[in-house]
Amino acid sequence: MAVKTWSTPVTAEETRLIPCTLCGGNDFVFHFSCSASLDKKSAAGFTYVRCKHCGLIQINPQPNPAAVTLRYGGTETSLAGHGGDYLAYEEANEAAFLKLQELGLRDAGFFNLEQRLFSKVHNPAVLDIGCATGALLAKLRDRGWAVQGVEISGPQAACCRRRGLEVSSLPLEANHFAPQQFDLILASHLIEHLNDPGSFVREIYRICKPGGSFLVTTPNIGGFQAKLFGADWRSAIFDHLYLFSIKTLRKLLENAGFTVERVKTWGGLAAGIGPAPLKRIADAAVKCLNAGDVMIMRAVRPGTSG
Image (cartoon, rainbow, N blue to C red; front, top):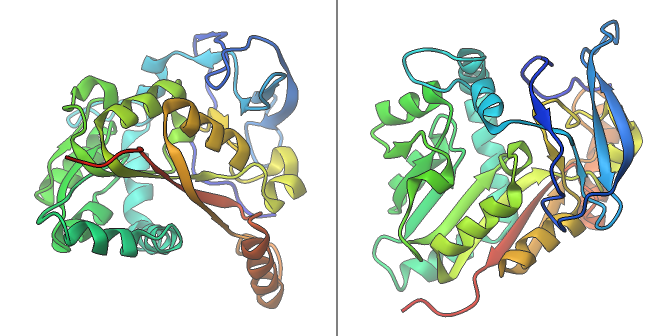
């Protein structure tokens, strides 16, 4: 079995039951429980439930937002929670993560989008939310974009600033960006960590220019690996408060006013699960069937920028 992705340790946090962020419903059924440790020796764990109305899978009751922020390190000077560990993880994997992001952007049609934008705008504005160490933002800056970032992990935000990037450590909504400010907004492996993805997407719609695009990347619970492994799926981790399918993520974006233009998935088998030839076959198959482990969705705010 593939090792699960990095996550903060399972801890006791104050929680409260909240309505479903997608449909507002309050009727949930058990989906699966996850062990706190890979060896399953710990009795502690966490549980996902499924909304009976819309099917969105989530951890609910949810931890308070302040507790979630502390998981990633709240300040630059003091490594609250496990912020230093998270920075080390991101730095160690920066090159691999950047390559995956670039491949996902290609699948989403980013480079054609970029070409069209640069034919109209000298320095189109991009916002990367959850920009980690800033590797992608730095790359986009070098390509001529006017770049800004949001990263609530203080140690990672400090890393971005050392690269000369303009990055805020405040949650998206607390930045009070101007309406219709950005031509492109990116959020890679972020939305599943948020307490209220619905509010988050509505704020993105507000700050996205008419005709502008939002590219969101997240694990796909409707994919082959999730169905194969269930509670042992590598993305069923303590830090992932929501597990989206193509259907539920599309609905979330459409509820905010976006039009979904493209959906692509990838990842048939994680490295180490089986022999390399089998992985290549599985990866090709799920890409054709749009049943991959990770998905990227390109959504557009209707209208034409003035």
